[in-house]
Length: 251
View 1 (cartoon, rainbow, N blue to C red):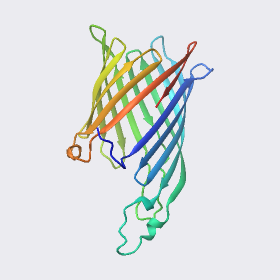
View 2 (cartoon, helix red, strand yellow; view 1 turned 45 degrees about the vertical axis):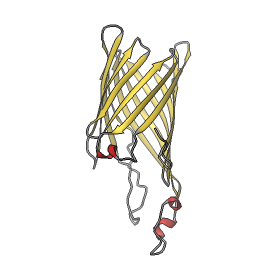
View 3 (tube, rainbow, N blue to C red; view 1 turned 90 degrees about the vertical axis):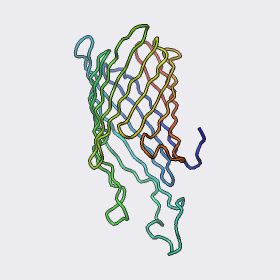
View 4 (cartoon, rainbow, N blue to C red; view 1 turned 90 degrees about the horizontal axis):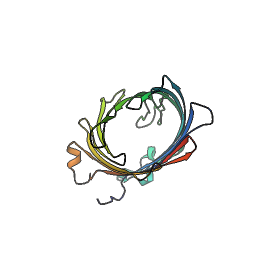
C-alpha cells in the first residue's frame, strides 16, 4: 500500500488496570487526530465498578470524564483569493477546550457479553451561531454484544455486532466474526452495512503480548476511487501481570 501525502494521521494510547479496591478499575486514553488543517486531541479518564452476580456472570458500571482540544489552522487550506481574503478564515482556532462525561453498563460471562454506553452526554458547539457553519458533538448511543462458540480442533468462533445511533445520521450496524485457533492465532471479517468491509489477523505470542493487523476498505462507490486505498491499522497489546491484578497497555 502506498502512503498518501496529506492523509489523515491518528495516534492512540490506552491503559487500564484494576485498583487495590475490589471491583474497582481505572483507565486512561489519549487520541490525537490530524486531518488537513484540523488537529484534535481527546483525553479520557475511565472508572468502572464490577459486581459479581454469581460464579460465572458479572456486571460492570462505568463512567468517563474527558476533554477535547481543537486546533484549526485555516492557512493550510487552498484558498481562492481572486475576490479577496475570506475574513472568516483569518481567525484560527487555537486550543479550544471542551469537557465531557459519559457512562455505560456491561454484562458478561465467559462465553457471552452485552453492553450499552453513551460516551458523551454534553453536546459541544464548536462554532457559534454567527459563524459560516455549525459543528456540534451530539450524543451517540452504542449497543454491542457477542459470544464465544467452541468448535472442534481447538477452534473458537466469536460472532459479534455493534449498533450505533445518533440524531441526524443513519443507523450504523457492524457485523463481525472472528476465529481463534489454539488460543494463539485469530483472524476474522467485519462488515459495516452499506459502508465498509475489513479483515483482521493477530497472534498471541504469550499471555502478555499480542500483535494484530487489520485492513478496512469502503464497500461503496467511494472505495473504487483511485485516491481511496483503504485503511491499514496495527495493534500492539501488552498485559502486565502482578499476582492476580492485570494491567492492559495498547496503542
